Amino acid sequence: MAMNDLSAIDKEKTRHLGSVQQPITTTPTRATGPLDEVLPWVIEFRVVGTPSTIQVRVSEFMTIGRSDPEKNFEPDVNLSPYGAHVQGVSRRHAIIVAKGERISVKDNGSANGTRLNNNVLIPHQEYRLRHGDELTVGQLHLQVLFAVVPLVKDSQSKTPHTVIPKLGNGQHVLIVEDDPDVASVFGMILEHAGFRVTVMHNAVAALGFISQKLPDAIVLDLMLPDMNGLDLAHYVRKQELPGQHVPVVVVSGATGGFQMNQALKAGADMFLGKPVGVDELVRAFSVLMPQTA
Image (cartoon, rainbow, N blue to C red; front, side, top):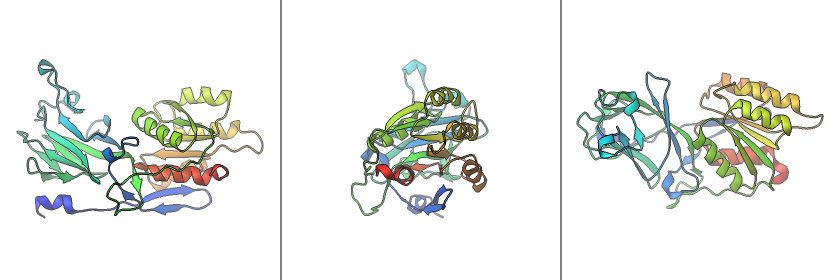
């Protein structure tokens, strides 16, 4: 395969949205983000061989490299804490470019080169970046994961955007998500949809909140720093009064059938695997809270 053919390949990934009553499968059309500043993408760079993850909200141009304190320079994606200097990472090694309907990466003329899925990138040439790709910067390997993505239904639109319908009338939604960027975007989506939002970044804080008063709905990350999200879902169900039901939407980067089944058994109403599309979250609330639609 020629290297410049990389950007021409477009492999659609199937998303899933499951519920207790009926699993739903969707294959959405993806659109990229500076065209929609209100609802940006969130990308995770997982440093292969370490437990570290770097989360960033996408802007139009983002540098990947290492910091230079003497010149007061720090890239948008700073690899200095991961041995960037000895791994052959330049200060401005590569650039993430978001424009039109795609996110791309290009090597910035680095000394040690950049690879995408083990293919050497021609300097200053753009290559499309997709969920699940592996980016090698110098000798440092990064797995690229999209955590939150805007989605559109009209792939022919010249100005892709996500239209969020008014679903709520001030109902209170609790978001329990340890990543601030992901939580922020979830919050913006639901506020645009007409809900009041409270964000908690760990299970202990969420337990304290829930023990005072149950919210009208919960968006719950499965992997929290201090507790498994399944335990928190169990606790919510025990707190409900007879006849009361709080919709719980579980989101997780672990998208296997086992994880989804465990979440549904714990009391979740729906399971969304990351990357979570804006329209998927909106659709979940339109299904679970139809009285407000």
